[in-house]
Length: 228
Image 1 (tube, rainbow, N blue to C red):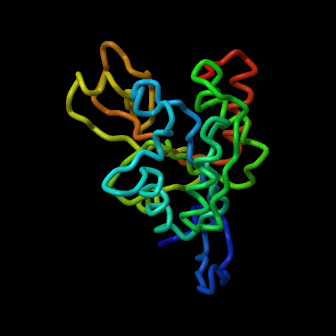
Image 2: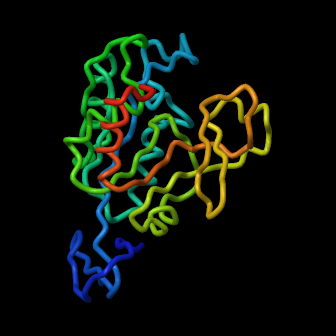
Image 3: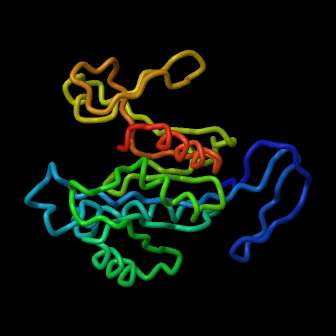
């Protein structure tokens, strides 16, 4: 798998985990910090998630978050692997990390204990901005998917990428964040759980964006942006 993006650069050899990766002319070295968003309280699944975070719910014998980490392990150019959660589920995630045994995983906790207090994804990302040094791969922690993340990472060239999926069903689309695409595959509208979806394209909760976007999120919130 490639670990570079498009930019001006020189031919050089880089060492990663005892492997040498050739950085070709016209590229730059890519390193992605990962944020797994797990700060929600799973209200729509209550009572199932009253005492268990959605990412820790078992599916075929292992928690959802374990499937996510397995997909991440297919990518070589990762920096920090952060699980962003809350005070209620802090100990549960730390216990899972210890059992899973991957030293790269770290749990960062937001100061909330209830649905009413939760930060929401946007504010959680803003709070993490000081922790991040590289471009960012963000994944919703309750996201169960079968495809590889590698094609998405390989396509990344320093501009924001969002993973989309066509559910081909208007009623089903009402349950998700619905996206409209304009010219040049640019997103022109993004509505969370709309009553009348404008398309059947939904967000998969997987994003890659440059570090500078975190600063823009902070600005957006300071200007009264939507906290979710």
